[in-house]
Picture 1 (cartoon, rainbow, N blue to C red):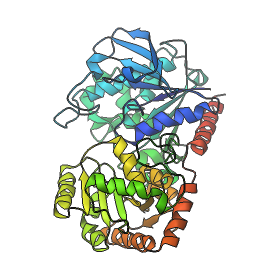
Picture 2: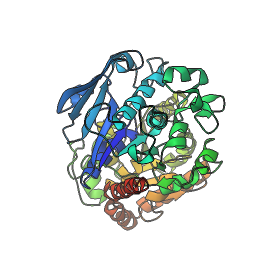
Picture 3: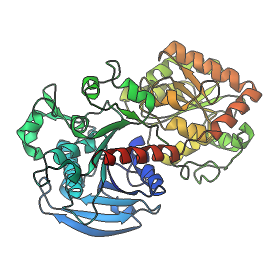
Picture 4: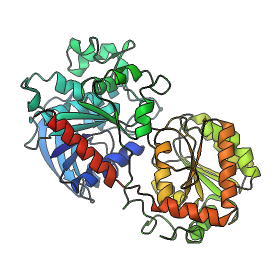
Length: 480
């Protein structure tokens, strides 16, 4: 079975969040199940140079305003990748892959990610190289327009069984790829794409809606989130469109790369360990406290946060609960970037409480490993969370998660067994969960029992990969 992953980011080549971790690890897990999975990705600056091997493939004379070349290659881990080398779209400096140096989205993002989707549809149609997918698996809004290009493909035969099956995975429904309706003319789509049931969305057009409307199936990254997003409370305006689908949304919980996230072999941490005990983690806690300027106190429960600093992640609630956390004798270490107000808030807290609070306003992959190894617990107080990965890393490292009971957090953390859940998502309940965690930390026999349960949890991709393969098979069977 051939499967094309279409994504805007992929670890280890380029990463801004959990989407990259999924698209970098799941194809490798599928390979063990006889799936030839390849990842289609823009060739942002420096990406090709990271490939272990590469060669030029098909050329495209005009990809939304300039020439492009496909580059086929593999990473050092054996991940098969096809890059879209289109300098006029992706060769940007001074900003990120989505936004410029001023923090605002690149003004031509509709073309940059339409190009990604258009190339995916051309590969699916067998017009760019010999390899052709049986299934096109698109991820989030950046790739969802693929479904529209396949739907309106003037080259295809009209028999349903002749085209690839399509699957949209929604990693975060809050990001919907919204652009002015006037941009439709630039996207190489007919006017009928905006007609009732198409990609029109409250006076704009939505890339994500193309995937919801025309993909054969829609999945998301945890069972609870799949149930949440068809409700007005969590549907972000898309609940009606999702409920209108003939088939229910499929929820498959994410895993993590057990080779990358392994405390027994992790080269990013001071002392590797495999035993689920505080003593085994102790050298990493000492090192993290020293690195961050925290007091060298083994008896203080050290909570960490590794996250985008946004209200979605509930970190304004943590700032409000911080005085209580410190009153319990605990410490807090924060790593992340995001809303300026929250960045300033955590910086002020670190300045006000030296030795007790540390704030590293940065994206730092190596430090995120050191946080997981050195902290006693990780706080994830999200107001909504499709799946979440940091709590899975915490389980793997014996760093007990304190999580809101929403989305994938509810599915992956067992309250009182592998971590601590709270609901509703407000300051009082977060404070109560911090109290419960501090009480457990003060009772070593309880904490060690929970660490053992956490580190035994299966957080790898094996189960999810089997579920995805079964879903692919169902989609192909429906075409026969």
